[in-house]
Image 1 (cartoon, helix red, strand yellow):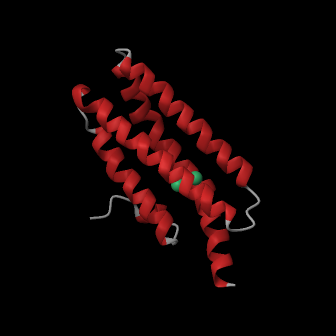
Image 2: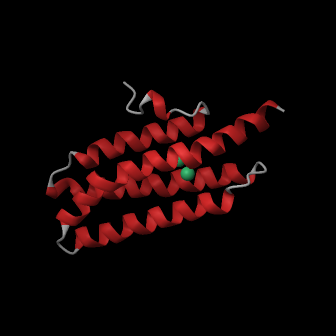
Image 3: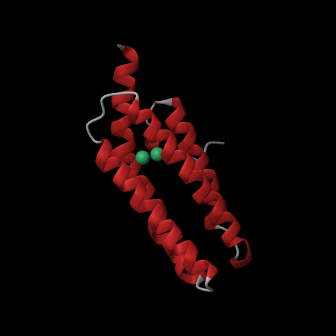
Length: 129
Ligand SMILES: [Fe+2]
Ligand SMILES: [Fe+2]
């Protein structure tokens, strides 16, 4: 079963595959108990570091005008994740859980629709040439 909603598929397999992986890990994180939370959060952060760096490698392969802005969004998101991970380790799991439920998925969705779909468009045009 696919966790990634059809509306969020961009049509480039490597990108859709990464986003599918994010959704699987995010689902586990969203449903994690307080005791499971940190491990699940670490799994999402680890995935995201790889995910972003693979996208950034893709950006190097083509002429991609929004590279700087896209990378900046990645950096900010990772900073935010690490900030809330820090909160979770210092006993404030409730803040980190609120961030995960109220902000992280929405951020991901918006980023995907604005930035990743744009990168996918550039990649697929380039691959056809
Ligand atoms: Fe992405
Ligand atoms: Fe991205």
